[in-house]
Image (tube, rainbow, N blue to C red; front, side, top):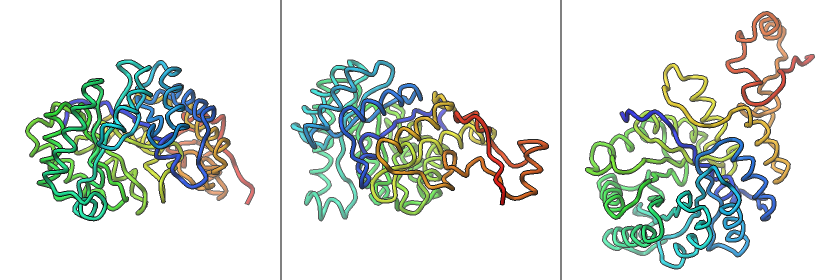
Amino acid sequence: MSTDNRIRIFDTTLRDGEQAPSASMNVDEKLRIAHQLEKLKVDVIEAGFPIASDGDFEATRKIAQTIKHCEIAGLCRANAKDIDRVWEAVKYAGERGRIHTFIATSDVHMKYKLQMDEEQVVAKAVEAVKRARGYTANVEFSAEDAVRTRLPFLARVVEAVIEAGAAIVNIPDTVGYTIPSEYFNIIRYLKEKVANIDQAILSVHCHNDLGLAVANSLAAIEAGARQVECTINGIGERAGNCSLEEVVMSLNVRNDILPYRTNIETTHIYATSRLLSTITGIMVQPNKAIVGANAFAHEAGIHQHGVMMEKSTYEIMTPESIGLNQNKLVLG
């Protein structure tokens, strides 16, 4: 296991999160969210997919010009036009500007989507990373659909892109398919089999199709990943992404067995959650962990009595730790 115990929080609310149905945001709304993420002290804000639209480009550019304390990433496919467009947007952040390029590596994606073979995919990935490195050393590569990729080939791709200059390599569960024990083994396999793995930060990006995005992310951390890609309220494609507030508070509350730390200012979690709901109109379900309306509400008499005597009887964290003033006792 890596001796580095700091987990970098890569927030993709403004990119993958915005891909959730009804979650579209305009430039000004994205800027408001970005400022709040800066207060939250996320390490990286993925501001958009600049080639996708003029609006995404403009939002990414303005965020790169405005935000001063976070790295600003833009996503791009593994081709020159996409990569150039990202740099045009994030260059205003200087060394904090990140080019995040990706290509799929699973058999199903290579056959049906890319119509490319292994040699072509490796060549394309290496070419993309080298072009991005022509602009900045802050380059991240993602192997799309990594968890359904044959492990020897995944290791080959990872080693090749690190050799080409990728500083961060992301191993995404693009379709929310894996389970914690399997994901742990994938990350551990790469740590053991990729000769130059110590030259890059391993990142994970989990979707929640089986309700396991947070659990999978925690398993990956234990296996050696040191960046987690996540969103506020867990919004995102289909069933959503790994929830930032859940993974961060899991690390805070269970630091006894998960001895890792983030830079997140947790007292801004609730305000960030509320701002996103207000802007997108996507409300948080009442029983949502950490930020749901019932997360610190107690109705059962036994629970109420316990909390009045000593909060820790039924609360594993304080409401104040996420920016709430108090819990609630509900008359049932």
